[in-house]
Length: 290
Image (cartoon, rainbow, N blue to C red; front, side, top):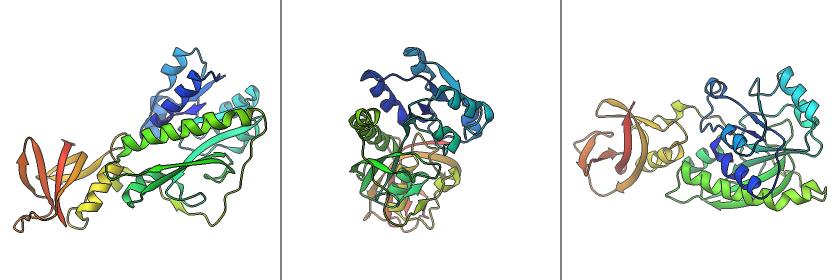
């Protein structure tokens, strides 16, 4: 198991509870996670200790170092399972596996549409209403492997990244438990990806910056949900101070404050603030000063 992200915890624990044995966990340490700006970093070493699983700490997140490649070639693993790994796997690592590496990738449409980075974040921002998780055999390219299974779930108007990762964990757990027996028995079936690929670009903390003057109420509300924890949060000026907004709701589109600028706090009630926006009012439930 190669893992570095909180989204993989439930999946890996479920496999262990269902009797699957991991020969090794391949992890990155906190310093490597910070160096590579891994949002949602999770330390799987606690699970490794709980189940007496040896750990190999990757020398590089890309797994391209001589030590990492030698490790995989020496161990000759059957299957590599992801616990959230935000880098491509080099061909030397993939070629060392007896069966292959299992990847998960989601998009608001069937792969090859929606390859690339941060698809759940982008899908909320783009106001998509469904999300499709794909289980596939990893190739050296980006999310271009042959498909083993697909399951979808709703993106509701109240979903944020926390609830999206809950759904992600449930769906991926079910897909892998349903398909692992066939993979181990060499009786599985795959299908190629069909159509022209499209790619989501990488997101950075700057992409979470709210511009009260140009972004409307509905976009701002989706943006806040899309970059909530475990991501860096939506950044904004509130009363002249730099703040991070974690949770907010559309409050009203008819109450009007024509003499207040967009981004102004027009009411403070029950220790919550109401912000004037292009198109209506935003109720901010949780925020903090940077």
